[in-house]
Length: 311
Image (cartoon, rainbow, N blue to C red; front, side, top):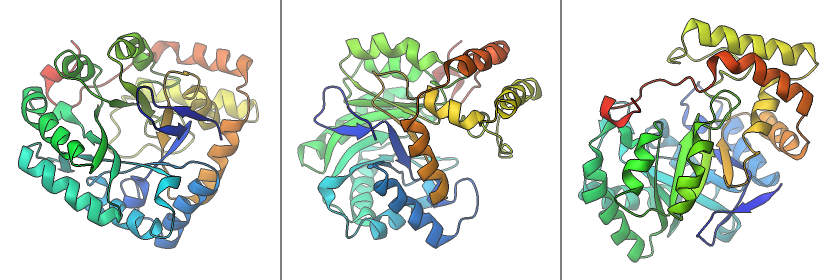
């Protein structure tokens, strides 16, 4: 699998990263053996950038990874976790919790250092706290050698400009914003490059919106958005292919985005993603699907505090 450097770091990651939210049962109940095999499949196909968080499975994802990775050489994979979000409505970005969270993650994951730690879904809290308290506390842990690189993640584009205009970061990760349907993260790339920050993408399928699978009950897409996405899926079916394949391939096309993280507790699907990533994108089909998706291009929803979202 193709690898790219994360700008301004010494890390190199695969273009498709493995998201371990699925093994924490964030989307469905999973078979334990299949979940563990999915991580092994990811490593086998070169997806050795692993993303997790205490929020995923309320610790289950990190614990399982710690077991699976126990006999895997630590220098053979890049490990990213998060802090600050611990349940649907439980956020704690205090300096005290930063230190505690990192130590708990290190224990669960069975490692002495974390390659990247991101402040998780910061749009739900006052961004002033992230700037004045959370990031300085993270930098202290970085100075101790527990964390190599520090960043933020979340949904609204506004959080990245707000934070980076007031505090330096090593890495940022956005989800749902560089897909077939929404390309706003690409519009932000010149700004991010000017701030000398590594750029990570996630969620090429927009929580199944850009697949043939049924949407999870909590998905915020209104009926008109769902209908257009289904029309795009039908175009792909009629051409003998899968919208998910096109969606994944498209989310890898921006060379300034080092990796696109996506996850599954199905090892067959993980291996399929690696195969898709190695194949050239069907340009005529891409043009046709983008035309179908035009009515919902850059549709987005509000997440977190209203003031942390674009007007």
